[in-house]
Amino acid sequence: DQQVKQNSPSLSVQEGRISILNCDYTNSMFDYFLWYKKYPAEGPTFLISISSIKDKNEDGRFTVFLNKSAKHLSLHIVPSQPGDSAVYFCAGSFGNEKLTFGTGTRLTIIP
Amino acid sequence: ETGVTQTPRHLVMGMTNKKSLKCEQHLGHNAMYWYKQSAKKPLELMFVYNFKEQTENNSVPSRFSPECPNSSHLFLHLHTLQPEDSALYLCASSQGGLYDTQYFGPGTRLTVL
Image (cartoon, rainbow over all chains, first blue to last red; front, top):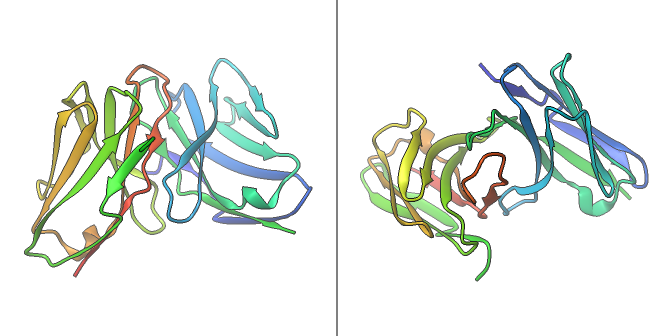
């Protein structure tokens, strides 16, 4: 049973527009969520995180929103840039080191 | 060298071979992890080491054998693997506390013939 789901395997967005990546989770014990970004031939790199006591966390062009009642989080990238083209993974955990990852969404930014 | 490094980057092995994957972190972290990424599946946690002690074994078959001689080095010894074990194997490290960020290596692309 997949506890973290990213239902869109791919997404294409025009440069300069907003990219919205979605993630759903089923484990209500999760209290910490992270987004990782992965370029080809590289390991995932940490992007942004959010604790379950918050519903929004912002870092530059990246904002993560958490809707606990819907068990849904989203990553907004504004404005989207060509260098944002990558695979994005969301992950959840309940305070320990065990991250549970989604399958990833491939984002392509169109110049 | 900085961050988390993994060698080799690519490995092709037969089912009867024995090989080892190596991971080294230069971040002063206390926890290290092995993950497996198969095509179209989520990253799967395999093993966790905290201060050289194994704290998690996520029901991994015994043909995968981890070793953590110190906080900076992590190995994954492979023997009698199956073709379905072909995947990207990622190493990560973190400080080891709650809610800390994991830093990943570039991975080893393993193909089992």
